[in-house]
Amino acid sequence: MKCSKCGADLNDGTKFCPHCGNEMGKKKVYACPKCGAMVEEGTPNCEKCGQPFSWNTPAAQQQQQVKGTQQQVRRRKPAYKRWWFWLLMGIATIVVASIIIGVAANSNNNSGGGNTQQTTTTPAKTGYGFRDIVTVGDVQFTLNNALDTKQIGSDLLGYKTDYNFVILSLNIKNNSSKELDVLSGMMKYHIGSSVYETHAAGIYLDDGFYVSKQIGAGMSKTINVVFEIPSEYKSTDYLEVKDSTYSYKSANIYLR
Image 1 (cartoon, rainbow, N blue to C red):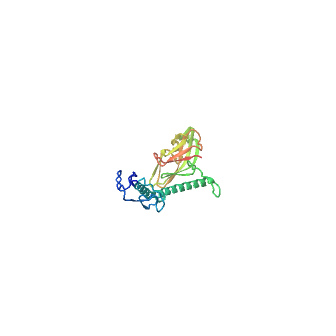
Image 2 (image 1 turned 180 degrees about the vertical axis):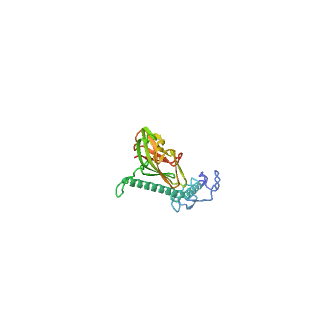
Image 3 (image 1 turned 90 degrees about the horizontal axis):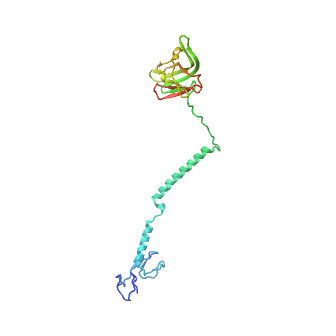
């Protein structure tokens, strides 16, 4: 006979195994490793599922393996029952939807087919021109016209130049609630990278301007401003205007 616990060969009638101390007359009950049915030790096959048993291997070890397998199976939940699975699915859905919407919008912008009408935009003006109303801060400027000349005033009371005078008729309106001091630093004439200040010849003109002029709150005046330049004015020349001498706010009025 064999020991039911360690499998050692024993003489018939032995009550206790001399190797492991197992009581030979007492049969133990174990769970079938396949179906879980309870079977007595030494049973060759499970009466429920027919699973064969090898009792040379201790049945307790088989039972322990079955219990471990059952516990492991119980721990493994399907992925779709876990919270992180649905969180990842939600994030993936949002990403895919965003990509689809972006591709569709880009396709509509670039297709130009079907009933979609393509429109073109006109680039914004880089500056103003004659008779445009130009607002800088609380001061409003309007350039009425420009005139080229070599002499301003009479031979006795006036200025004459070997170059060129440009006379700008400029309307200035004070939109503030206090008197405005219009100073020469508020107006500069530009030809390329060259900058020209107001010229004293302006004092010999009707409504001429040179150094300063006062304009009351809510009132406007038209003044003639003179600049001495190398040649007659061109359309690329421009007048830079500011709301005060040291202001960072300015606008360009082109002579076109």
